[in-house]
Image (cartoon, rainbow, N blue to C red; front, side):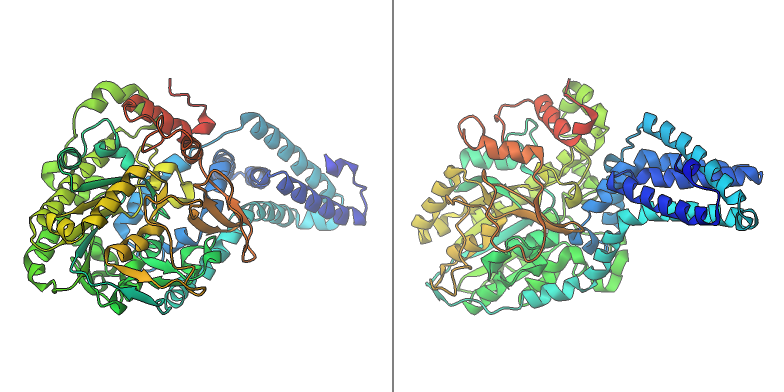
Length: 616
């Protein structure tokens, strides 16, 4: 309509161009970028139609309409991608993991059509096209270069609409090329001064993969996915179970980089972990004379596995697969099952190599990662029970995730077996040994999002944390055992950022208090603290985002020049609020006797709020 007001003079084209520019800016400010794409697509539709190129014309119009339907979810997804997301796509990435991640995108890219706006935009596009054509035909240059000018304008509209979405993310991807080198530099710091008491206790730390408490019977899930651990919890006093523990991230590398390192500067809390100054826990252990080794059923390299090359660079390492040899084809090589690999390495080959002093052995498992059935034995590749088919069908079919939940719960049952098998070894050992199990992050199987940080939801960060003192360890230091039993009963909110304090405490390593060393100390898991560090700290195109586990917003004293925004989801906000009534809300923010239907209802409400799902 703007074009109808323009004078038919030589200056009219310039005025027209200025008006188009103003209109584009206005549409962008109104977040109507998808309309620019449709206008361009309609221009091409009419141009091709006038030249009797019906296939090209219909294709252009169809692309414009599809863009309208998917514009909002695509925009939300791309702008939420961060450095952590891009780091997963660097060299040596896993093709199988990439395939699984792609399979989860269907839930993120659900079309959101706005039919009235679409029809209005199509009508205005046609009107503006013929207005532009009328103006151009009034000038000789318009008649001669009519197709070129119109198609150029259409192209500019489409390109402008698209580039405003992806430009900042592309720049971030390019800048991320130095991320790994930056991480290495930031983790190259000297350990603080400390004192070490004599100790002959050995630690075995079992690192789980993609395991959330919210699918574990041990933590109140109504399916018996953890028969062995549940039995230990009931019958074995040496077994210690912690509640309300969160991973610091939803991706393996950033989570383990923070879980196995000490902070140098507390003001770095609101920076992604690769930008913080840290001291690897292995360097601290080595300096204290505690030998450490990594036994990993994951890869040797790749950005998803930076912990093995940064945290454990000075540790003895054993891997099930040589990633350097196979590269991206590593997934074609069959990995051993976690329990078999660990049994061979620690029970048979390594049992006689433990020295007379203290040692820490890290076991890095892989079961739990998608595709869920691919990394567990055949004997576990069947439904845990028939609970879902009998009781959950009406609830679960809306999100089409029945099979994923069945597969994931089967994987959890195998993980339960593998953990309990390692605990059984610890129990039978005559050496004083303390066992710790936790997972690098959780999994959102109920929403089909996996553990994609750009689509964060509460259960991606809810992780189990278990300890087991064998009789020899209790005899060696009964006060230590009693302390952790007491801490487990507190149910204080904690994060894996507090794990280094636990490891040092169990190894009887104490950082000497000083002004320079004040940043290194964090409370033990289970200890009351007034402030929980932020989790899932991510650098995105708009700045820094984080998830808050505190009732009050944290005081950010140093923003490092970034715009910092809280991105806590609805379920996390409910969890934080529920901590005021510890007797009503148990380990995962709801009553432990909650039915599966209620659990599904809540998860679907949090996952699909825009679809108006009420759980009925």
